[in-house]
Image 1 (spheres, rainbow, N blue to C red):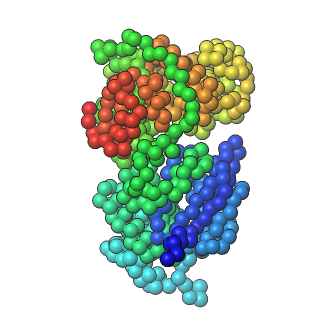
Image 2: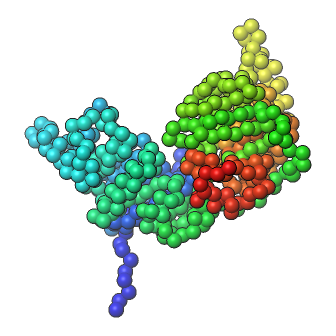
Amino acid sequence: MAPEQPPVPLLTMSGIAKAFPGVRALDGVDLDVTAGEVHCLLGQNGAGKSTLIKVLAGVHQPDQGEITWRGRTVQLKSPTAALSLGIATLHQELDLVDDLSVSENVHLGHEISTAGFVRSRSARTRTARLLTRLGHPEIAPDTLVGRLSAAGRQIVSMARALSHDARLIVMDEPSAVLDPGEVDNLFRIVAALTADGVAVVHISHRLEEIRRIGDRVTVLKDGRAAARGLPARSTPTREIVALMTGRSVEYAFPRRPADRPSAATAPVLSVEGLSREGEFAPVDLELRPGEIVGLAGLVGSGRSEILETVYGARRPTTGRVLVDGRPLRPGSIIGAVRAGLGLAPEERKAQGLLMLESVTRNVSLSSLTRFSRAGRLDRTGERAAAHRAIRDLSLRPDDPDRPVRTLSGGNQQKAVLARWLLRGCRVLLLDEPTRGVDVGARAELYALIRRLADDGVAVLLVSSEVPEVLGLADRVLVLREGRVVHTAPARELDEHRILDLVMEGSPTR
């Protein structure tokens, strides 16, 4: 008896490369998807997932590589071209028109018409059949989409994909805005679609979802496929997490001082019952002068959102933030900065730096009022102060007039830290402080962070690299799906314990 042949792929993407100015987003990625499977695409922010699916959707054109669809090489020159072949993408931000009906959204761009007249009744009938196929006959085709829940809107997007006779549907974080019951219903629909031979590419940061509905997994990291076609249900969680986050680097952490801040020391920062609906549940924490507290968890666990809410970049649903016992105005960055808070954001180039400006202007940005005299900027004083700050942090090259875009990743991060040092920041919020930084610069940044803490600055740290959290923090809060599931001194934790908690933990103290 001849051995069983593997199924012929419905889709094959071979050697896909895509670069943008200053960034190589994809570097020779391969992906194959077979009919009737759920192929899960995993990776951290910046791994290349979004760029890959935009190439598949016809939004971006690859610089290199080949796409084969049903055995034939194709060029997806536009989203319309992809849809015409049966490739539909449900982006995380659903592209629906709130002021149009369900039926009108389902057929938008390919209306049913005769002699130039839209056949609305036929469109409504067809929409009703599609909604019934998706298990939601209760959604009326005439209902305005703006009146639907998040789950209802997602069903409409899926109906629109099926209206194009989609044979492959890409779902980007489809469960992000759904409650558990709605997620169960979504997965029931996915199972029904794959039973009909429709392939699904499922993008999610929730590994328990991969176990439930996935058949195979491809992991992207730094624009490359770290692993392809792993069995979704049997591949160990630790292996998947390591593929997503692991890096071959040496961690050189400075020694912790023996006399860390005691519980008797008054906190400089207090977070009481802080939450944001859909992002993270109520969080309580205290941060004392000279203390480093780490937030550990997978991408999507709420880590960055907590930092940004504390900083005032997001307005909380509940709770409050206090500095020295005085509450900050919710959602006010100005109030936070005036109280002594500083943020080094995850995306420092997009959110933390003025890339076309000089090092001086980037360092002085939060302290310009110090250098204003009668409405005029004292540029000499500004430059001198910035120069002292960059020398204090050993920023290289030692040139305050140099455009910040010409610096290495490590020195760009030092420029952000120098800004808050010049401002006299008392609470420093660090989001992925060593992302995109080479090994030597990492060690310098670790020493700098420890030095700032030793000088009395309180640090709240987020990092995807568990060794980094454990090596720097005095205390660690472990997050899973927006909830704190464990709090402990760093010395009582190890990498395996944290990975177990972020994957399987339940809220404890």
